[in-house]
Length: 257
Length: 257
Image 1 (tube, rainbow over the protein chains, first blue to last red):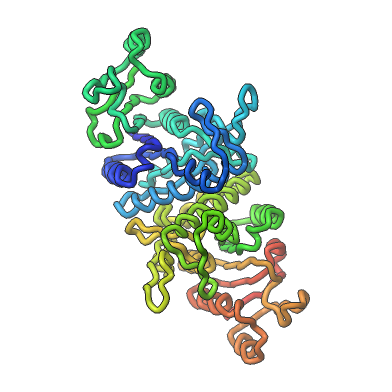
Image 2: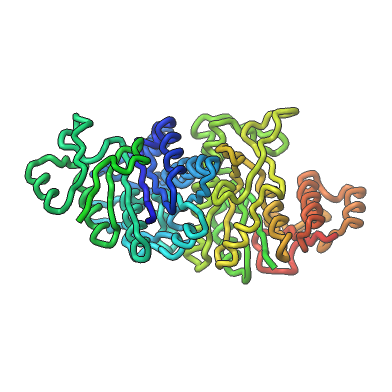
């Protein structure tokens, strides 16, 4: 089973949480892939450079200056820090943007209805699963940032959840694959303010009920929808969990068909 | 013959020169590796962030903030731009820092006599030639920036000429290797103001004479000394040439034992 683990920005923003997470990730046995977001570092760097940050529906509008900022922060600073940390723990990591080895190709999003600039969308056709699998078979651990390319020389800023899903689905065509979304919550909660209210399993039927009851909050809906799409495309199991509970296989919410 | 090509900062600073160089590099037949410097982009970014730049003997003093800047610019912006450009030209490039795949390990320079901060030196023992050769054998073109790691989680800023030399020497233990230093001059010149005064060949004997005559200028001495060291360690030929003349195998100055 290949584990594709995605960590969100909140983990990256805390040096302590990141260091602890990376150590847990390094300890996972078996083949694995890490996909990371960028956190607030990009927004902070943009501020210091007087580059305005515009977010629409939680996605960064990426003009040319902003693309440089996210490329520097995600593909440079964050990616290489994580890779160096993993290497120091005996985990043979390799940092990758989508351009590296032609690993993942994205398509620039149409300027209508909203022009997000240099933002890309990924489909599984854009994933060179053979290349990624080949690295894994050599004992190498791919560490993806969310900067992809269009194959025509243009870098594109993509959503790290989507990168993780696409990579997992790409790998699932030939190997059993598990997708884990790690973030600052313990999973999908019945009550967001109650840490003990984690829902252990959600299937299609249960999801409909949760939606009807209004239990699942707005921010979680795209994550769960994405999880079901990944399952439909062959990923065996998708887990949504706290980054500090990576090692605990019973923790978090398992999404299953 | 594996070609290890190093391009200097002046090429990277010019969008036109870089694009033209990358296109020439993509056209080179056979196995190859690219090593790039960072140019003035890092200094400019540091300025915009009010991080003071201190250079001693042409080397950047790298405190923690400066290390972040060079990691962002060299490993992020410049590296991924070059990789995306190469991919668009059908050249299957992969961008690497020294940490990626554990490719190149450096040692932090002692704080005496000058404390350069997070600056590393590379010896050929730090190069994982088998990993690099394995990529090359798969038709992949490694593109190195000059950010290395110490294997203990610390990134280190290194000299790109030294990275190129160490990689070439590492590869030379098993394959015929050529090292090409490309920059903004046509090679080693008898008269720096006369573009037609390129010295076609320099051997040990000839170098002594040139030094005695005062023909070789200060900036060129470490390059030529490095070239001789690389030759002594098994690199077949070292060429110093203009970045615009990459494709012309008769151009530039060939250093030979």
